Length: 357
Image 1 (cartoon, rainbow, N blue to C red):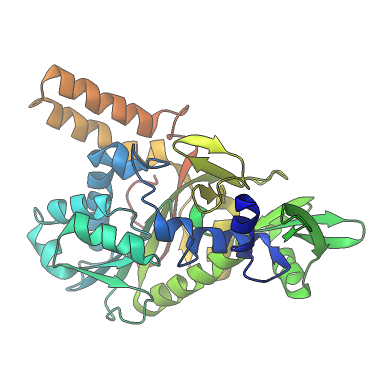
Image 2 (image 1 turned 30 degrees about the horizontal axis):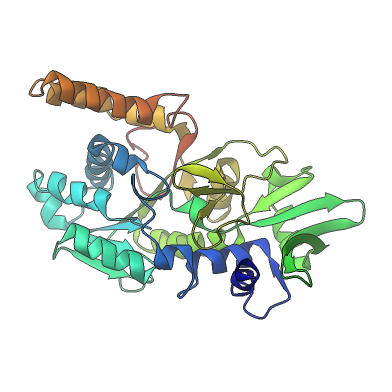
């Protein structure tokens, strides 16, 4: 009975919900949503992100941002925007690294883009800095060039799911049966969604399609800002280069796989990012793109091993072992190294961005 009631609260009196709207309610509902009520990060949470694995990850991102400021012509003002900043541990390291580069440090303004009030409070407690401003949109940003950065931001934005049949395209929905159990059904897809999907080459000839409609709405706001003021967007996330008709929705609770429709509001739900589609989207919207690389390649290109070598000289053996184990998690193809990809979209006079060559 309790489970049945908990199912109904995510439908909000609607009989049918497309996959993205249902997951949006489960993750972001202000009263019952996962990101509104739960601390999901780290050992005591449900999953661990790269900045939590090692400070070296965050240091490399800081160095990349400083090098990008130079690529943009060392402007007197630069806006740094982190998208979905988690518990704030990345930005904490960024602030410390930036202090070592006075010219950049005096030019930069830091913004955190966060939807969840619950996580915003967590970030404020963790970061304790007067240098940061929290924003809900990008209208308040000054007209200075901007660097947007999102680590595991895009995978947390709910996706739509479709299948191509001989009777046309159908969209997957969730509904409740008479016992309030959740069932999956397919309904005829909206014409506008079909037209949108058909406009992407990388989605052609697929029988099963995942389409990030909400994600693209978010990205359009970011693209608009980059086109206005110059700058770029760096995305690091887990995903694939070519779609192959697979349902990538997954749920995690306490670092273990969870059945998608169990523990709603108490478990994280994400999907794998289609990086080929992402680059196609950016090109369609007048940004230039770098070739997508793996997290392993990006971090190595940025000199993470050399940095580790330098700091290891002042470490005890046990500390060195710990650091290299954490590095292995970030870089190993069997762990995060290959599954995580790095994408860069930009509007800039130069294309000399580090990490991608």
